Length: 260
Length: 253
Image 1 (cartoon, chains in turn cyan, red):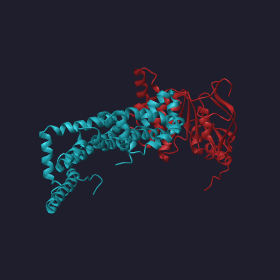
Image 2 (cartoon, chains in turn brown, orange):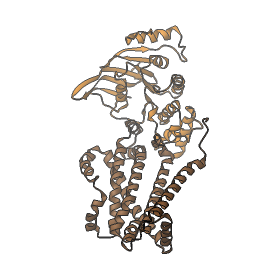
Image 3 (cartoon, each protein chain N blue to C red):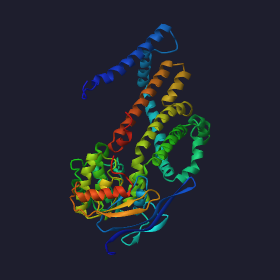
Image 4 (cartoon, rainbow over the protein chains, first blue to last red):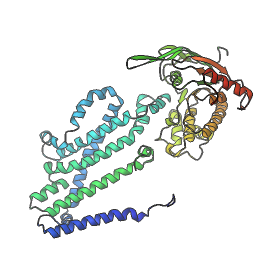
């Protein structure tokens, strides 16, 4: 192969699609061969999704879940980025706050459920709060390490050109740390999407997480349970792919050169 | 040199760093004057404290004792009138060529900013790369970009810290003549740190030779050859060999 040879475009899609087909076939025949009454075959799941769509629940639930993630994740970004930049910028403050944060960080957001319910009652706010909490720490930590990792040479150059501290933060430190921050946001969004399912199981009566638990509790509708699982997976993937596109912005692409 | 045209003066500079509770002296009573419009090179063995001295001159470090003054004023902090140029690593990867050159011009009106950006892009030979990001440029181009970013703010003093050290030898040679051309056009004062003795003798009006740590200035050599310099001339070789000898280096391999 010469240096210009590239794999065909269709090859990029063919193999993953084939793997998907094999997965669905395995699933289908496992259900058929084991003659299980509980676990649904792919076609039953598809019918379940169609039923949800007919009842108008499909898009309503997807919309509810996405809205909660958008609110919780958005709030986490709005609080976490300035907080993380500040802590990275003032290592003295970071030293004070860091032990507390490192202690809170490993606590699963699910452990907060009782506290959240005491604070906000059973409802929308609790779900959003749990998502907020789960997304906050990865964002703050990414910002701190992003700022700390800005090469001294960039800060020096900024100071040399006469930038005041605020300008230095906005024009040098923030753009230099931005690739790190984007990585943190992406991790946080992934976690937020995991947590929304759990939050909806206990705090609200709509959304994909609620669908999972409701379909099981009211009549053991495992076709709907699996339908909800698949939807969660596909939407999670779509969110991540959207976020990946941020790396193609030209002013941050330099920070992702080592990754493929 | 008369007192009138002294641009920078370093008086009795001592510098020591403490590491693990041990105090390491780096600079030992450095005295140096740089004239207005002069091209001064500082050479010395690697790790001798040349860069430390340059950082102190630029106001990034304060000397343990002694005083550096520029235009008669004591240096206490960095200033856009005197720009420090690093190796090409100093360009901002998130800005285009234009953005980098315009970086220090944020106080100027838009039209003037655009004019200067265009002028310096042309001067350093980056025309056609206005919208390119540093990752798309070669090492030599990045280095020229960094020099252009520095020149764009019209500094009257340039500090260059081994600016061509990371470039390949052919690019390094071209960059030297580029720098001389720019210096002759802009009439800035240049303090240039290098460990490359040839580079120093090719570029400088005077070469300050530093000793090993704690560094003293051993000797200041005036390079009395007009530009463009013939690097096979007897005088060039004599000066060059003199510095090699001064540093205690055999000039035979």
